[in-house]
Image (cartoon, rainbow, N blue to C red):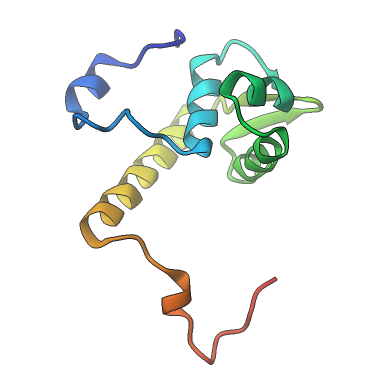
Length: 119
């Protein structure tokens, strides 16, 4: 994909404010997807997106656990499994829609006395 572009269908089907704010994970995935012809060091991704290098490294590690990025020290690249990437994007969109319709969950409110603390 070219940097600074999106698919016209995505553009046409998007809400007016859909592209305004993206969280750091979304920004990293989009950056890697838009630059899928290269592999990147975490520090370079951080510089490009004006994010903290440690935060980018942590996000990349979580994305790797989910199979959304590939890693060969010290480089990172978007997955070559387009079906997995599309499925993750669809799931993310469903969560976003649910949050908009019903409000975000506060995990502290859901906590019960019977629950064990996870560390």
